[in-house]
Image 1 (cartoon, rainbow, N blue to C red):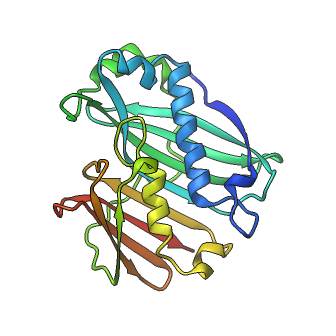
Image 2: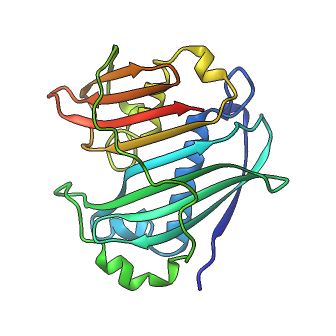
Length: 242
């Protein structure tokens, strides 16, 4: 039976804000990098899929953080795949410090696309050929929640530039998250309260588009809806502080 895979990280100076603690985008980036490293090591990474003009894309993500580690702190990310569906695969994560205390967890759901048509590919073959990669351990928290409706109280524009684009030639997940966090007051961003982020991608955004980032700010939460310049909804998301 497959087991969880473990990867070691350190909070470097480029990962922290002025509180000298890791930012949520940097920890989210470490989580997603772990997914790529682990898939590559198991033979179904982006490099292997590109041979058939396919690639992985993140469809949904939930990230919970009880705290943010300080600069130069060592931590470990454990990852495992709990299931393959026809459309989505679920990959899970826990983040623990050097003492073994868990301070974060994540659940991600991934789709595979054809890079020529940009449409979803049936994942059944991955489940058949890589069934040994499934770990019989449930997700460490609730799967990503859908945000049904957002009534923005503030809106910002962002033109998609070179630095926003990832290897799939669309906007990188962490850039979306940075756009959302940039609309929040500093007291929320720098506080030490536990936080949960849910993000649901609906449509990809490409180089040169102008995005409208709508934020509905509540007392201890923020809801987001990002639209492309043709009014297509690209994603909905929520950030909640406990």
